[in-house]
Image (tube, rainbow over all chains, first blue to last red; front, side, top):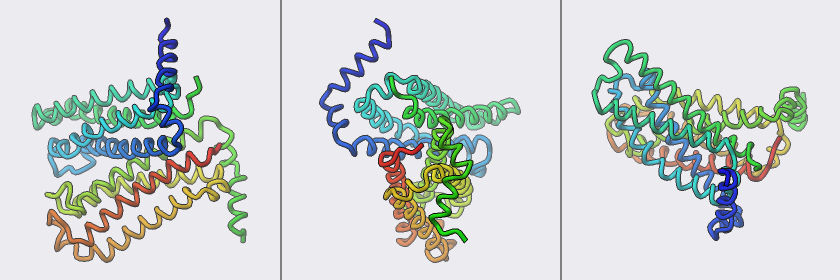
Length: 169
Length: 167
């Protein structure tokens, strides 16, 4: 059995569950879940961007990078479970829309990458206070990491919106 | 002078509006930029609101928070207005007939008003209390109201997409 067939069967099975049926037949549930999802994305995305801007020394330069990290990193990790739950419920409600959509997998790959990068940044901040300030090379690397992080999170938002436009089998 | 309906027809009939309508990729790209900008507006203003409520960044003076955050908020807001404007002209008549769109525009106005009132009235004596971890009631009210308004705005924004399918 090909993976596409497995995903198609999985979608059929999910769509037949009572939970999926409730989500499908109650008109306000999907927009409500999407609204919660977007509000959480707003908090996570802004937290990540502010930390990345601090790494570029464009935001709260007078506060240590580690302290800025302490303000925003826990927020990122706290938001992820809510995103997974609302996102998961959206998949249960309309399985084919994402499970049979390559844009969805692009989004998940970018998410895994962005979270790994965030985890690495968190580790770097806790390992040594001046981790990204040791020498010129580290400073450049820090800005590069921040730029990649910004691009990854932007890519996730783009992919998320494009799921709606690339669905259909 | 053109009356408002003529303006709408003019915008909708413009070459730019036509391009956005005709091109399959343009609308979703503009919409993604809009979502991204709104996320940044809402998320960054939340940092200020939570400070005003005395719930986060309480060891920092309020003015330090606003001066470091609000430039980013305004940049993102400008991008949101431009991208939103482009989506609007592609289907202006339909947007104007959508209750959630009207509500969203009203909410932007009220959020702006809340900000202006706080700036000129509530924060007039800001230096006196900006170091307090828990700002006075009028500041907490402004912060709380701001959160409610922006959440409601995002709700309306998402519901526009479900009550009209443009493009």
